[in-house]
Length: 341
Image (cartoon, rainbow, N blue to C red):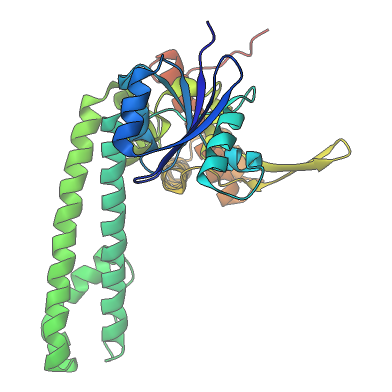
């Protein structure tokens, strides 16, 4: 018996479902949220394709709970199949059509725990950005009154606190009151970031996959948890190169007439994880330079710019993560890969 495939266009309160019955009859129906769940619960288990957008992972878990197989597609792969004007009905049919294409890339549904960790990362990232903005604003305002501080967030902030008596002499009382309040806001952000770090670290200690990839040089607690939560099911990726491409760490390719040109990295995927990987690679590269340890990265650094070397190391780190998770191995610093025959 053939499994029925569905194309589901989701929103906050309005949902459109497109499917084709075994006899070839097409349906394109409009549902509310409770009516949609009630309707699908009565149907035979099937494949339900939807775009990997807001609330898609929650919907994937709900569909799995009632026996269906969710298929998450990237929105850019669905758009070419919209034949006419963009409407809910056209989108649902386009999602169904895209899901029928052989070799169509899919997004692994995330668990509730993985989504929770990514939310903690997002909250932490916002607070770090706010802290940087507040410190830079203080620097700029105080510089207008002739007070200059050393570079660096921690160094400059510590100097501001130490020189409060001097600052009071330069800054009018009206402004000085709010300088104190801004310092308190920065201190509160520091405390919130520390609490978020503790929550993320606690999740990492309980996650076996995080323990495996933390052994890789350049991958710390933040990078490990963000990667594990972003990847979802590692078996969605057929190779380490696919995972590196998912994070945008491979060259863009353009070609015609049988000729192919390689450009800069594609920068696709999650920019946050890609940034963490590249920063980790820079830290490893600086460590190797200080220790003067021989290796392929230092040899590459002799003929290529530092940014190129850092991206190459980040690419290798992503491939190593895939190898450890896909094959359930422990990291071996002296491991030598053997090309299959």
